[in-house]
Image (cartoon, rainbow, N blue to C red; front, top):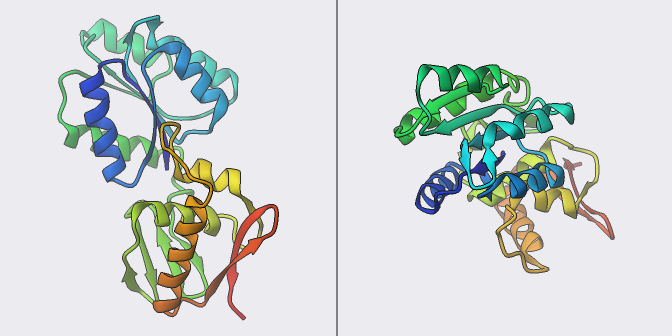
Length: 224
């Protein structure tokens, strides 16, 4: 899952980003409307967490731009503007939920899960390939029903491949699914993650194989 966090307060942004990454979520951070606009033009996100009081305007200005691109990306507003009128303005402005500051991280994560269940119910259903299953809502892979512990980025690689099983997945798409804008990516970082993922799958006797497609990327398919 890839999320855009639009928050200009450094400590709040760092705390939220760390919490979300700890839940296996790729986080792109923006501290202004201008950066947020560039972020939604440059990548697809599964959800946007949006502050309102930004240095260059009201965060609600971002929502019409999202909708104009026919993006049904859920938006949760996180704002110190918490009056009834403010919340009505946010919801009428296209937000899917509105959480006044201060809030508990536990409540935010519960609201995030609830909002994601609405438009992405099918996307969050477990994926199966041979004897390998992947439940991204529970962030758990399994082989023959036995849990397979995977680090966060290997789990994200596996999700991107399994959603397109039998088809080539470009390096660019894989990197977008796994790394945020602020992550430093060496030329062989993706290959290292895939190499370790292959070994874990083989050790668990998963009947799948990951193949490198020269000049393109990778694909996963059922092993012969």
